[in-house]
Length: 412
Image (tube, rainbow, N blue to C red):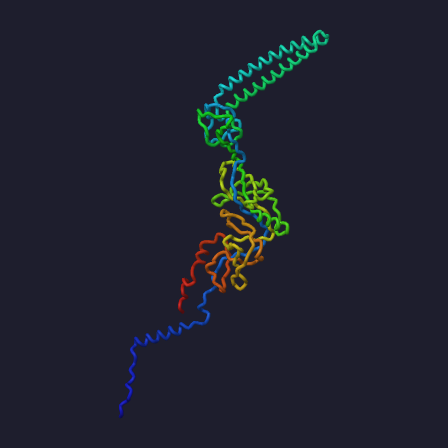
C-alpha cells in the first residue's frame, strides 16, 4: 500500500475554533440595513410669527437738564458777612442765602429819607405861597410875572419831593439787596464765595447756582432721514400715526425708569452740521433719582403698525446692507430671509425680553429660528421645536445631550 502524498488532517485546537467563529459572527453583525446609521435631524428652537398691531418705538440719545436754573448773584457791592444755607440742600424761593454788610446802605437810606423830608417841607412852603398869591393874582394886585414864578416854584417843589421819594425807594432796595434771597426753589450747589469776600454789583459776582430738579428736561435728537422715512410710511398707509406723546427713559442697566415723561415739542428745523432734529421732553423726578447732565436713552412711540410681527432680538442678524432671519420650510430646510425692521419693543426686564418689530419679509405662520444655530448644517434638515423665552432646565439639558451618548439597546 502506497503511502499518501498529503499528511492526514488533524483537528484544530478548540480555542482557535472559538476565535474564528466569533470573528465570523461579528463580521455578519456589522452588515446593518441601509439607513440605520443616519443621524436624526437636530432640534432647533423656533417661533411661529403672526401679524398683530404693534407700536413702533425708536430709541434716541440725549441728556437731562433742570427745568429751571438760576444763578445767585450780588446786586449790591459789599462784604459777605454770613452764608445762611447748607451746600447741596433744598431751598425755597425767597429764602435768605447770604447777608452782605448793610451798614452803608442803611445810612444811605436814612440820608434819602432826610432829603425827602426837606423836599416835603419846601413843597409845603411853596403850597402856602401859592394859596396866598392866588386871590391877589385874581384881583390883579400882583404882576403876571410874580404869579408865574409862584406857580413854577410850586411845581419845582413837587418834583423835588417825587425825586426824594425815588431816592428813598432805591436806598431801601439796596438795603433789601444786602440780604441775598433765593430767586427760585430747588437744590442749591456749592457756595462760590466765603464770608469776608468782597462782592460787586458792577461785576454781578456769582454766589451760587440753584437747580430745580423735581422735574427734568430731556433734550434728544433724531435723524432727519429717519423722521422723514416714518412720515412717508404714515402717508402711504404702511404705518398709522401715533397719538402718544409718552417718553420712556432707559437707565444704565437697561431697565425703564418708573415714571414716564411727555414730549413737549420737536424743532421745526434740521441742524445743518449733524442732520439731526432736536426734540424735548419733560420727565418727573420727585425723588431725585435722575441727575442733571446725565446721558440717557429715551424710547419714543412714533407710529403703530397693524401688520407687524415680533421676534426675539437673537433671531435677527443685523447687517450693514440688510437684516436677515433663518426660516424653516415645510421640508425642514433652513433658508435665509431678509426682513425690514421697524424699531424694537421691550427690554431686559420684560418677560419676553427685548424684541424686534418686523414690518416686512415674513408671512403668517412661518417658523423663524431663535435657538440652536450651531446645529444647522448646509442642505441638512432640522427639527423645529417651539421656543420660549425661559425654557425649563430639563428641556434645555435634554436638547444639549448629544445623540451618541444615548444608551445602546439591550441585545436580544
